[in-house]
Length: 480
Image 1: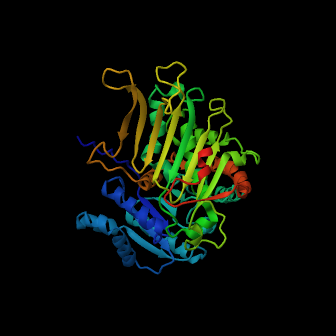
Image 2: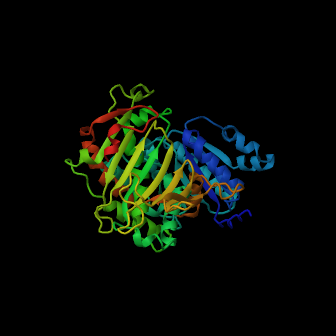
Image 3: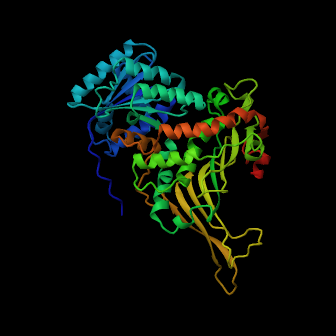
């Protein structure tokens, strides 16, 4: 039986301003996400989208751009529905560092509110390169487009994509700028991994099933392995990546956030004020990696051929792979290693979190076997989304030989009629409703950078090992 669609949330009208609407992220993620929210009636109130970019588009041209971008999706819908969606798009041309376009943007927002017939929640989505963040923040404030003093209902919200800074110093400077211009409840720092279905379920699964909670600690868990592996290479991101590297790109944010979800204490309530505090507490307890421990705690790698990728600098020392062993200064997790691993041009395309439970002291399972009995719990995030628990049981027949079995829950196999929302749908959905639970707080960002920055400063002392594209990464990865 098909599950009922959740009752749509009653929200005020929404105006979504997308800076960089003609860019790659907007085309691949934001516009499709917005269409799906509209088509499934999750946008419960009237809305307008104002694109802001450097191209000299008219209203008709931006609508034609959106139509072309979403051609396959719109073609599957009836023409009236597609046209109603497109009619909500408008455009403001301008450079990010010029004052006049922001005055024109303010006028467009005012006109949109009048057309909507009520004050609107205005969301500013910065789908632009991080180098432009500070300029746009300042312009939104100085122009009065975002008026913090009169915005007592927090109807203006700023959505910022990662990376949020390059190290502790730059992240803190950017945060100070944001904190000076806007209130914390207006700032939504996006880590789209937090919005993925399985990631959201880590907390619900843990704290809704008592059988795991008594052993969710150093006494019951041997190690935790968090992997984010990709078969893709640069795909046009050579210039960005050669200056950023894998640790900044996904380690400081995605993988540390997954670690925090696994290790955090029960927040009591699934609300931003509770969940974000508990995640930040975990990140604040990350044990610093000393210079002497670096070689034993880190593996760096670069796939062969990376230097020839378009946009990559001539003498790149950039890692496209890393494996990092992390510990927490926390009595609950004392001595438990969290292994963070990520790489480009790998054999597999997967993201998952695997919990390895300790062997029982008294067991019928042989402990001296080449494959000793061990229970694992895996949260599969990509390419499938689901949860798997491995256990051991007797084989059918007359012998007492045991074998490994698995209990598996696959989100996509749950119903052939049910479509899982994309992470960016959840990002927009929550931002419209003012729910910051799945967005990183100031404390989380600062704690993550405080841990990562010292490693980056000593990063070059760890050998950069080559590895073959389509393989498992550097040979020394097995040592961690």
